[in-house]
Length: 140
Image (cartoon, rainbow, N blue to C red; front, top):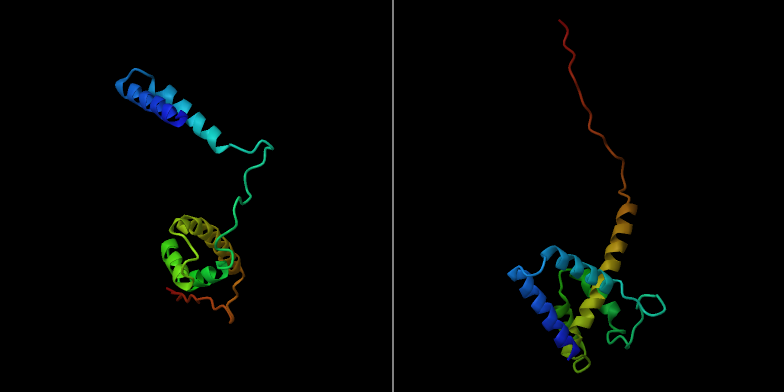
């Protein structure tokens, strides 16, 4: 109920701004401040929430998912989820697609960092040949 009340108040503010009853800049500034505070929310200890609250349902399958991504990087989370469901039917619920997609973001980021690190270390065997420039000297 509290959320609905708060949503109603926000909607009324939007309507008031549209009608010109409230200064738009003041409202925008206030909303930006609230969003900034919300993004900075931390635990009472001051540390950000970075631990799992549930077991990872894909714990044993990340190696296979990574292999599939290396073979076909264009695969989406839904396609990978369908492959996992075909591989072990009844193990996953359809609501776990989003969990897989969040994990895929981390896997893709890790693969990208690995690729970037390897890219700079790549050595191409063979001598580097520079193009030669020939100019004719004209005498008069």
